[in-house]
Length: 449
Image (cartoon, rainbow, N blue to C red; front, side):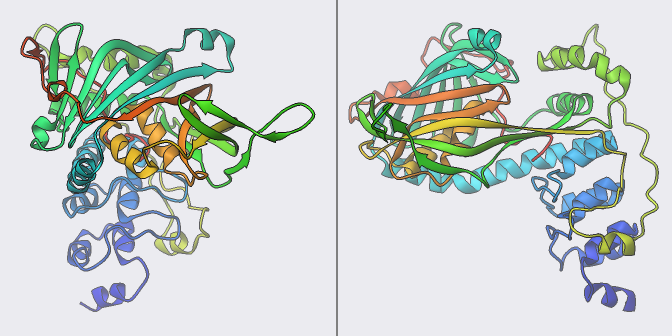
C-alpha cells in the first residue's frame, strides 16, 4: 500500500507502472487516474505500453477506453508506434478499438447533426472539383467532377462520378451517396451504383476478415502522415491590374466574391519504414495492389489468406524511468526500433474567393460536409473550411490534396428549394443489394490518427 500511495502523489503514475511493467498496480490506479494524460513527450499511457511492448498493459488500457486517436509531440499515434513495434495482435487490437471509438464519436454527434439539418432550409447545390498538378504529365490525366447535392429535412443525396481519389488513384462511376438522418444508423447510409443498378447499406462495423486485411496493409506499408500546417497561414487581398492595382472582385457563378491570397500554406508529410525489410520494400507495391483490390475477399482453393507475421521485437530499452521522465520535451529517449524516417514539406500558393451573397453559412456547410465526409477528398474540404476564413462564404477554393496535386473547388450553383423529390432519398425498386461491393469509407486516418 505505501508503494501505491507514493505513486499517487507523483507525476504520471500510470506511465510509471507501464514503464516498469507493474500490471498489478496499474489495475489498481487505472480507475482513479486520467487514462488519457500526456507526459512531457506527449505520450499517453497507451503510447508507452505499445512502444515498450507491454502487451498486458495495452489490453488493460484498451478495455478501460484509452483513446487511440491521439498523437504525441513527435506527431505519432499509438497505432503508428504499434506498426513500428510489429506485434500483430497489438496492431489488430488498436485497429478494432480505433474503429469502435470513431463509431461512438459519430453516434454522439449524430443527434446534433440531424437537428441542424432539420433546421436548415432544403436546397440543391453543385460543387465542381478540378484536380490540377504542377507536374505536366500528371495534370493531363487528373479527373474533374461535379457533385450534385440535394438536401431535404435530415436527408442528403450526393451524386458524383468520382468514387474515390487517393494516392494518385481514382475510381470513376455513376454513384449516389444517400444519408437519411431519421433512419436507424444501420440503414442511414446507402450507396447506389446507378450503372449497375446495385445498392449497398454502408456499415461501419467491419468483419474480422476486413480487419485482418487492413492489418496486413498497415504492416506492409510506410507509416505516413500528411497534414496541412495552419500555424502560419494568413490571408491578404488578391490584387488585379497592371498599373492601377485594386482588390480583386469577380463573379463566381451568380455570386459576387472577394478574392484572397492564402499565404503560408504548407503541406507537411512524414513517413517511417523501420518495420520494413529490403524485401518488403521491393514487394511493397505488389502487396499493396493485391490487398487494396480485395484479393482476400475469398479464400483460394479453400485456404485462408497468408497473413503477415509479427516482427521480432526491437532490442529491449535500457532507459530507466528516471531517465525518461526528466528528458526535455521533444527529446524522447529511443524506446523502440531505430527510426527510419523522412519528412518533407511543400509550400502552396492558393486563393480563396469569399462571397457575402451566398445563402449558406460556413457552419451550415460544415453540417452538410460532416454527413458526406466518408469521401476522402471531401474531408479535405471540411478541414479547410474549419480554418478561420475571411468574411463571407468560400465559393471558390484551392486545396492541396497530395504533395503534387491541388483541387480547385467551386460552388457554382445553390438554391433553396421546397420541391425536392422525396424519391431521391430512396433506393429505386429495380436496384439489387450488393453486400460484397466495398467502397472506401474511412472514419479515421489509420496509421497516424
